[in-house]
Length: 452
Image 1 (tube, rainbow, N blue to C red):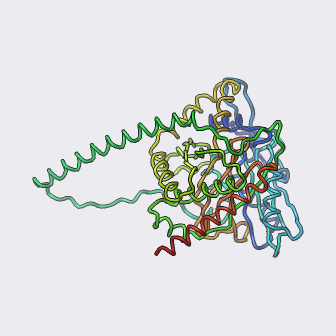
Image 2 (image 1 turned 45 degrees about the vertical axis):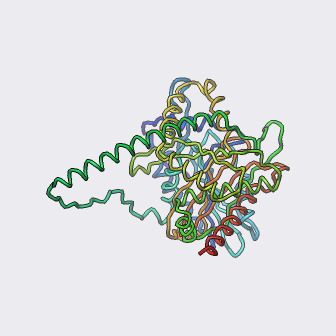
Image 3 (image 1 turned 30 degrees about the vertical axis):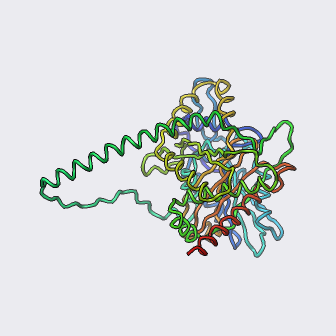
């Protein structure tokens, strides 16, 4: 089935789009992946119709990247022979399982053909109980996680949900100014001034510490030499946990949901490595993507910087680990690091990639993994008329041996997902981390309930 394309003026890639092009290797594609599972089979005609609508709405899905040489930004141009069937594939298994779906996704996590639009999708039928699955892959040069989320949701019933970005207006009643009111105002200004000085000082030393640790904390666990070591891709996701349970723990430990999930995931990774005598780091170093989008912007584009999260893992003490993550996450939210990385990479991208990519690749390889948290729909949604049972997302890995970890909340459930490089020393690494996440979550939840 062909899509009619027009000869509209081509648009240029943004600098960050190009960075993701340059970071890619054959062994580590810069591809973002979503997996949906269903209890029923999918109608081929309805699936095809939904994808045709998406391709029509988002031109990048029928465009290719055309290089214009050094010092000139590449551009998106319409594919001359776009065919939906080259990207949308229908696969049938016999009594397939979740493991068969993740195994298929891992085997097909390969570098996308640059001569064609940079995406693919696989509809997998024949799962146990008459179920099915959908795997959607798209190159990171098309968009960041937020853009992909709302683009992919255009395939579903969630496209009818109206987004309200208007900030509430709170009416205030004016009171006559009194002498006491003046002193109260001066007192509040005095406190605000010293709070501002305190926050500035704290932020300055935190940023300085981040800069120092970036050069001193080098990854030692899960190192991989792609030229020597034999490895395969592994993908898995955890059993969903109730969002109500997550919120209960959030209140119990007085932290954010993100802080809590990051802590439990860190413990899960630490547990797996310790059990296999592979825990060689005293500090985990995670790359945390952070949006630099303007308020209400949901476009299919890359507007993302990053912050480094350094987590001490010598001890498995929950309170100590949570406290460290909570403090660093709070500082990261107010940090200049995401905007600085965004703008520095944007400037570098205009140079020949050979000038700066070796440095970027070296820094990327020092992270234990990429960790992204995306809020999904909180109610069940449908694709092609069928309810989505599980909704899972995978960011690309940061480099050889690095972990690509995603967290998404959907239908009052939370799921973590992991994509890994697996060797003889790290059997079922992705599945092991996912299972450890559920074990740690259950243990922490039971301890918290028993303490009441």
